[in-house]
Structure formats: structure tokens, C-alpha cells
Amino acid sequence: MNRPVAALALAIGLAGLAAPQALAQTAVARVVMLELAGGAPGICQNGYVFSRSGASGNSLGSFVIPAGNVFLITDIDWQYNAPTGAAEAGQQQTLRLSAVPKTGGGFGVIVLESTITLSSAGQGGTSATVHTPAAINSNATICTDITPGPFSGGGGVQSVIIRGVLQAGWMP
Image 1 (cartoon, rainbow, N blue to C red):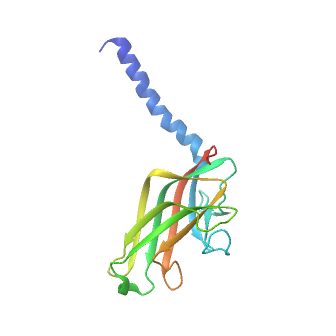
Image 2 (image 1 turned 90 degrees about the vertical axis):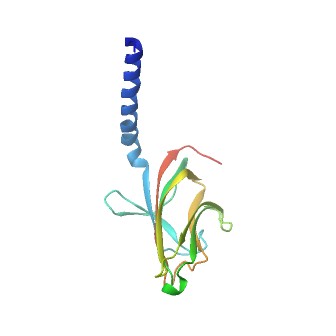
Image 3 (image 1 turned 180 degrees about the vertical axis):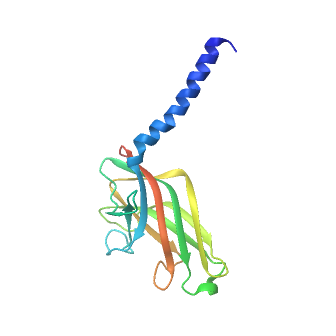
């Protein structure tokens, strides 16, 4: 390899190493972790909302996508316990995340689905990385539902954790 080509290859390699570190330094404040929390009926049909967790483990309150930003969902973890336990072994449960307009209006648009098959004890859970991030803008609220369910009451969804990144910019 001649010297100019080798120098160019080295420069590209070094630039490639520096870019992720710079991205990590600027993106940390935009990383979001949400946990499912109870709430009063409102925009979300079942009354459940998501609470943002701080880096030190403290709750930062109900999550609202800031104006002019898009929330990109990159990962989801969730657990389900069947109310009747082993009687529901082998049954599938599908968790859905929806973007619901803040003005209300039904269930909104489903942006992510995740399905599990319950164990012999009627329990299940999964952690999933989203290959194409689901984007939700600041005019919407993130709502969740499960089918066939039930969502809660003597069993149901035990936890939902969503991870993602806030990105400046608006999308219709």
C-alpha cells in the first residue's frame, strides 16, 4: 500500500473511533428509560402512563415528549403473569405500544408489537431490540395494551420498560 493511501486509511480509521465517543457524549442527556405506571383514565384507554426514570434511579414523573422532538423507541422489556397461572400455559400474549394523539381519539396507531408464549406456570417475558426504531412525535402520547389479556387485576402485565432516544426534529 502506498503512503498516501495508508495515511488516508489510518485517518478514516481514527475518525471512526472518535465518532462513537463524541456521539455518546452528546447523546447521554437524550437517552430515555420509561417504566409503566398507573394513572387516571385520560388519553390512554386503560389509564396507564409511562414514567421517566433518571440515571440515579429516581422517577422524573410522567413522560411527555418535548415539543419539537421525536422519541425513538429502541428497546422494550416486559413481563406477564396469567391471572389463572398454569391454566393459561402455552397461551400467547401480545403487548402493543400505540401513538395516541394528545387530543384523544381512540387507540391511535400501533407502533410496536411484542408477543410471548406463556410457560407451564402461566408466566412469560421478553427483552427485545427494535430493528427499526418506532418514532413518536410530541403531538402524541405512548399508550400500551395487551391482547388477549387481561392487562391487570390479579395478574396481567407485571412490568414494561421502554428505552429510546429523544431526537430533535418534528415528523408529521
